[in-house]
Image (cartoon, rainbow, N blue to C red; front, side, top):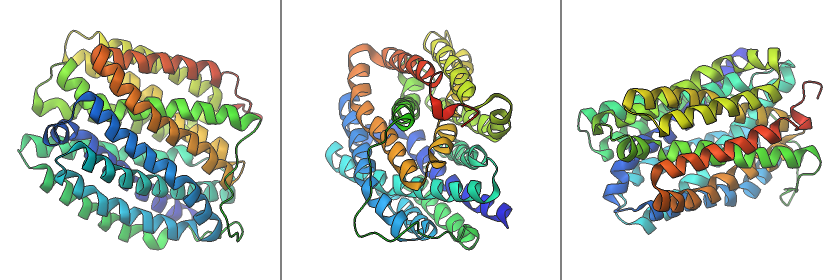
Length: 375
């Protein structure tokens, strides 16, 4: 029974990865259609992050008062509905407002699925979060490969996004009956969102920075290969696919690695791999070397969220939501900053900025109490 629940949550998270990769693989096309500059693209991504933050107290209330399963199914449906209209936007402001809605739906879907993952871990007494998160990676790889194929076949963004929307609805319908039958923690009339204290503060800060890194790479990597690496337009989505693929492989083995090395060591080692990969990619003499750098980068980034969400989930659903909020704020505020850095120092400067943030994660993770094996 638990195995079916694990697969159901995993396939649902596959949908989220598929939706994100669909957007990320066609960022250059969306940018051109909406006449975006690096700065206005940063504003668009800021609005998406704003949507995630607006959703936080709402999703905290929903998880306390309704079954996470119902919340996940509703928000997953909204993710599918809001994907296609992205292809129709031709001004940065209209795109920004739509992306705010996309951010709300995506974050609600993500948090509710992580809550279901925490339920499974509690019931089984085993670590499953990295395995579950690996299916987000499956979704991003599939989405990136679909993006590569549709680009090479010269399919329009409208057709591409419309087909993926239908695919998300189909997958969601297939897994719905096997999602865990959880119960609301308790009935309340107002949201109980609280500021973390003690070890959760450090966990929240690390999550903030981890979101800055992963969100920035995912949103800007296609442009990195287009404008900095000067890759052929047909091969640009492959750069994203390789990054997403390395995320997937590491998350598939993340639970085993956690048992052997512990969450703290994995985050510190991941920071080293991420910085090394980013430096290789930025100073790569050609497309192939840049791809190698992205493989190392994705491998290093991969386990941050599974380890952080697993640690927060042990403290309860509200702790998970609160710590995740730090991540969504990080993903939000970092994008206009990233846009300014890219506008001022080009994409090389932007990715070196990400490397500097990664160093801070490594230092904080090495001292985080809630990531210690004995916790």
